[in-house]
Length: 357
Image (cartoon, rainbow, N blue to C red):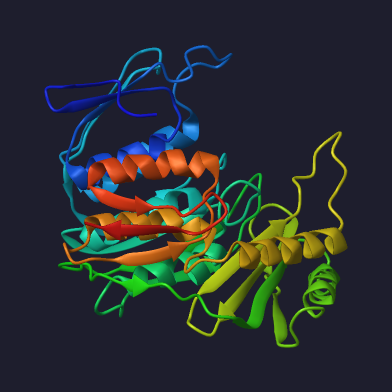
């Protein structure tokens, strides 16, 4: 949804949708924003705990940011300060995974005043957000395509943690870049191999092997080069809650990476526990769907690629992506409003070509 007003250089939005994108673009464009009617008609009105946690993270990496929240929590005023960076530590909300916060840091890291080194603690994998493995294997490689020297861009998973208590830890490092380079990326090639990682935290180690066997049983019908390793975490490195999951990624002949994953459900009353074989097959099916969609980026990395094109040089950039989901297309429209882009979409089924004018 576009801004409903633009007074005194302050954009006003209504509702809680796309709050993370709006805060991110506010920092990059140095424009203050006001968001009104945040869940005004909900049983629990106002800003959510994980959104407050995100704003605290943004406050840590900026200097001079002004944040105002009314007593009901339904009106937020955000005036961005200087994007500074530096070394920070942050305890993420357990309502969302670390990936929810890490996606923002990946987009902002290159534009900080000093190199960013962020230590985030919380849930490393859940059913809503991209896991840290997904970001490491699919999103960060897209970011590296837009920089001249990608040395120093790194994501390390030191501990894993599942919902609901978390206990995971990751360290994200990103150097400062003076400018982004334009890209011409129109050929996504053919899949040449599939790799992955299965993990089982505070459960029987045999579950990881069951995940591997079920996923390979599906993928070997299409390609012979499939290898999935197991990550057997023990002690403090296994987090605070039991669970298991698997992350798969396919590499193409041109260097494109497609990722997919599946994790177990949170054990609670009234919910049947997840079966490892079903989780493994689900991850393999999701990977096949990502490959079917095609494009030169993973679907989770589309917004980052479009943002880097918008913030890059004035030279022409071309990028072929897979089909957009309806909800994502609305979020991309906000990025397009930031910098003028030419959007060519041959059809709904075809890939969309974004070209910077």
